[in-house]
Image 1: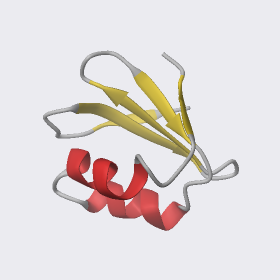
Image 2: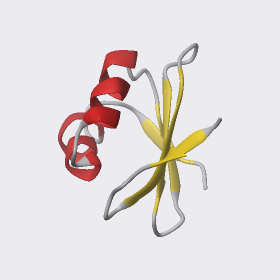
Image 3: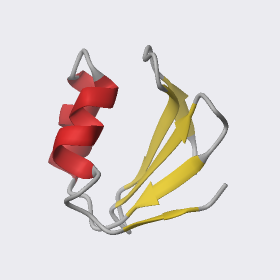
Length: 70
């Protein structure tokens, strides 16, 4: 999955696969997580939010299943 670098104090890059609704987040510490069943509008909101980390913590982390993949 292609990820795009973002301006964040905690997140290095973010990617999204629309067919599977999988959001992939690479953190600055090198860990990579995939969040599942994330609608495209949530991804769009994340990418447009000035605070990516806050948005992730508030709307994604406890709302969607995830696994660490790296």
